[in-house]
Image 1: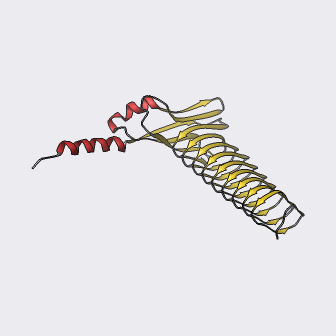
Image 2: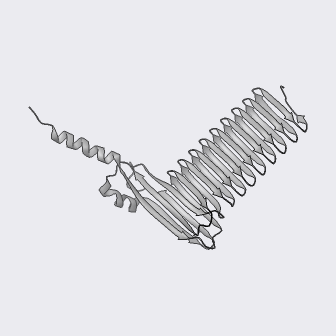
Length: 273
């Protein structure tokens, strides 16, 4: 009977290369005197949490790569990973990216969990992967490529540009501006005005103290409990508007039914019932 051990060894070696590695890195700096944090992240998940009374910025990073064995991990990280946290005057900057080196067939990502003082302002540029930001007293300026977004308890004005993926936003203390490519959007609890430019996907907006203005391409739309005016430019999809304390203006409404109920002010434009 023939033995096949060499073939088994080859298969196991190939599997090891495919499984890849995970390596942890911790970064931190003193945050006293800082007013803003900038984040420039590539592939991988990103979670930013504001912590009241915290005096340092703390970053926990998990570097992942396939097709690289564990004993070559450190060499890969040196040659292909940019991960640094620096202070520049009153701003901190976190960079987390993979470089285009000689490891062309390797897929790598860096998962980040970041704790910051709650009082800071944030400017975030994120490539791909899930994103979560919560408990920030300052403003938020976010540009995201792809992946789900969840924002909660942001105290200042919030501006978001998103490519694709679901978006959930709640408890915003200032105004909200959202430009979204595709994916469902849910917005709830904004103290200021809301302005949305949406490509495709369902849209739910609820409990807004200020005005709401929406430019929507396709997908159903539901707007409920608004303290100011509501203005709609819609391509296709159903529109439901309820409980508005001021005026409703339907500037454009393509295909899909329109339902408007319980408006304290006037209704302008198309109204089915």
